[in-house]
Amino acid sequence: MNAHCTKLHLFMDGELSEVEAEGFRHHLPRCPACESGLRDLLQLELLAARALTTGAEQPAPRAEGNVVTLGAWVRRNARVVAPLAMAASLCAVMVPRMMPVADVPAVVFLENQPTRELEARLSHPRADQWRRYSPMRGGTDVAEAQQPLPLRPLAEMEERKDFRGIVAAYVLHGQWQQAQAVLAREPASLARDNDLAVVALHEGRPQAALELLDAVVRAEPRHAQALWNRGLALHALKQDARAARDFDQVASLGEPGWSDEARNLAQQLRGAAAP
Ligand SMILES: [Zn+2]
Image (cartoon, rainbow, N blue to C red; front, side, top):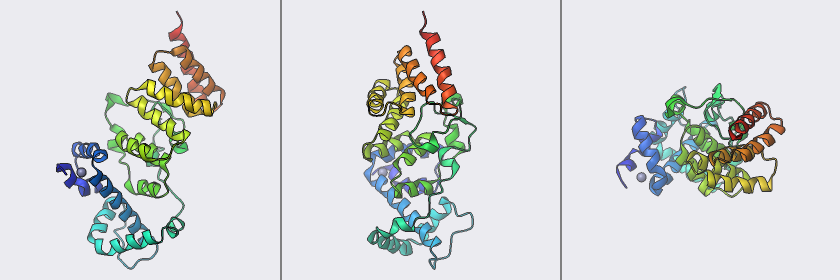
């Protein structure tokens, strides 16, 4: 328990300054109390949202209906919501069927952006749509500041155990530690290893990324994201000739956008590798 632990509700409501929120995000993966507290709050918000759409008697939150409003509403109505949460956990089998088909808003995967800031490729299909690569100016979290990650879709993906979606959302919004926390507790898969490699690349551990990606490509030789990311890892390790071969492979897969960018990268890498 420290000063951060008292800020969970403020964090949840988006009432912390950018600096305080960053501090809290840093604190979160290290504090089991806050992490489980946050999970409980998300769960309550989700259940409250569900109760509202299934005709509960409580007055609905105001029309804007966003997570901030809902968060405040949940706490004002904690006594009403808590039994709901308990009831839902007792009929866990029923809950998934009550969930409406996921409609994750575009902002979660930054699909509303004209360019992409992440050079690497994530496993989630909606986070892997090609846009021209345009690294962020000055290395600040501009996108995160302008495009806050809405918590409700995150909670819904959590409910569905959509690990790929949650990891992609955190990474795209610059919340790398949160992404790592999810990666650490999800079951093994090639898609997870690809995303783990994206994190390793971000942290300047290309050798670790390479090892993960070698295994993915061995298992699935035409794995586009893993080939692409392995090209980035090899380039970081100054093995440009090998990197170029991986980008050639991606180019040959013929994915719109990615194919052309891969071809250009391979050419550049060959140019740099030539004596
Ligand atoms: Zn804490």
